[in-house]
Structures are given as C-alpha cells and as structure tokens.
Image (cartoon, rainbow, N blue to C red; front, top):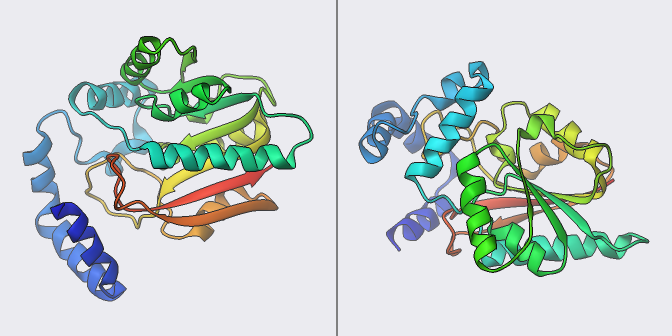
Length: 253
C-alpha cells in the first residue's frame, strides 16, 4: 500500500521536481540501499557493465536472480490485455492465429494463460531457473508448452516460424535492442505484442533493465513498423511485481 501511495504521489509531481529528487537519490542513497536490501547476489552496477558481459556471465546473473527472488511482473490483468491484443491481430488476419512464441517467459504466467486459451505456445528465456519454475507450474496443471533456453538477440527458430510473438517485461532487459527487434520481425508472421515499463534511465534501480522507453515514441521507433497501436497503461494497482506505468505495443507485419 505504501509503495502505491508513493507511486501515485510521484505521478502528480512536476517533472523537473521528480528529476531533482531522483538525482539526489541516485547520488546519495540508491546504490547503498540496493546493496543492503538484496545482498551479495544482486549486481548493483549492472547498467555500467552489461554490454561487456559474456553469454555465460549473463545467464548466470539471471539464474541468480531467479534463485533468490520471485519475479513475476505479469498478473491476470496483463495476460488479459495480451490475449486481447492477439485477438486484434487475429481479426486482421485471413487465417487463424495458432502459434505463439513468448520471448522472456519468466515465471510462465502469460505462457500458461495463452496455452489455456488454445494457442500452441513456445517459450524462450535466457534463464534455466526461470524455465524450470515455469515448466513446473505448467506441468502441475497438465498444460503442454515447449520450453527453449536462449537469447532474445539470437532467436533459434527459422523465419516466420510463429504467427505471433509476445515479449512482456523482457525487451527492457536485452543487451542488443536492434538485434532483438530484427529477430522478432524475422520469426513472426503476423504480429508482435510488446509490453514494457515506461521508464526514464536510472543508473541504480531494483532491476537489470538495460533499455528504456520513457515515452511511446521510443518503442514505436524501435520497431519501425507502419501499422501498429501503442497505448499507455497505468499498472500501479496491479497485483504483479511490476507496479507503475507501462506501454503496450501491437505491431502488424
């Protein structure tokens, strides 16, 4: 409750004041607070060095996150929005949408919702720990999903392998944004459904974000598609881990 009140308070502050307060926090408090809160496993300097990390270092870092922290950014409201976006894509398409690739499945919340809705779902995630947790959840409900470990920058599937690609609370984590976007456009046949936090860059924060989308235009420009919708969402009241402002992008190929 206190966090939601704080987020609402931030919303009404003028942007110059928010920037001043954030600058003071970043300079004096943020790094030490993160170290105290999370301890040894959390890399407080992630944004300074992420571009130099090897594949092994990257996967190990995310495995450590999943070992020490339950990180489910999506909730039922988000899943409903994504399913609605897929339905919109299907309404524009001549043939039904059957196959979906989720990039960055995390705890499996969206993947399970999509499979339950009747789609044939494949999930790609960099973390074996995340994939194991998601698979265990799906298996407990006898839901079949194909699981694949790999990087969003190098999607290990042929061209146009899936009708739709979903990527929710993951695009902000990739090392190479351009390579990730081009890979998505290569592998999808019909549409891309993207959900990202609407955030300004901050050097120290409680996440491993590497890409930032402070407005709709940054997300629209990243994909460069002619036909799309992009809306802002208020997720402060959501029950998932992410509580804040977000952007939902539906791009048509």
